[in-house]
Amino acid sequence: ARYLTLDQPDGAFFFLPEAQADYSQTNLGSLFLHDIVIRTRPGASLSEAQVRQAMASVDPNLPIISIRTLKEKVATHLTQQRLIARLTSLFGVLSLVLASIGLYGVTAHNVGRRTGEIGVRIALGASRSDVVRLVLQGAFLLIAFGLILGIPLSLVTSRVLSSQLYGLNPFDPVPIAIAVAVLGLFGLIATLVPAQRAMRVDPMVALRYE
Image (tube, rainbow, N blue to C red):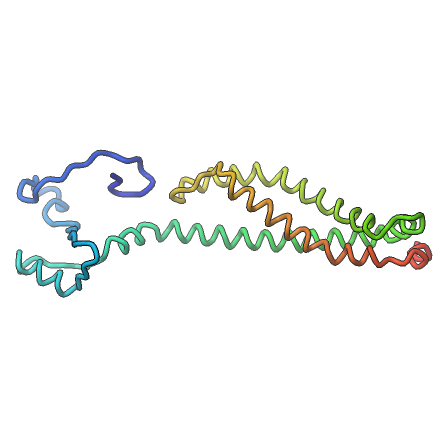
């Protein structure tokens, strides 16, 4: 079992009757009960008043500080990890949005800078689909370059976060594949407007612009 934290390895434990506990005047923690676990039948409902009544029948002088379910006690231990997970998710979403905005800006700038080239290509017989393919190719080259740098950095970051988040596998391929797919989808959406703008370039206007 795992006694104190969820991230520690499983260990062997055994329980002793409280009457056989070793009480010490120097160790104040041994003079009171930290936790009392009450096991109920599956599906049985047990109110706080019933628990206090049952404890009072054993020892009416026993003070009870708080009563919590096992689920609530586990949730208390996971509060910090859940906060870190939510903050990490928030930063991930913000990074994705900023990356999409940056990709849109770079792609739109490249389309505007290459308006003359696009007009020449169309005048020489390039189809609209060829122009769209040219724009998407440049955008996805940027995405590929970002992934080449980002995936190793994400593995290093996940390795650091794995010590703070229970059950996080830093080398799990599924989240990495999902992140790559989502980034590719957002990258495609971010390049649609510049691609449509390039597709509507008039060769004569583009040549005069050049």
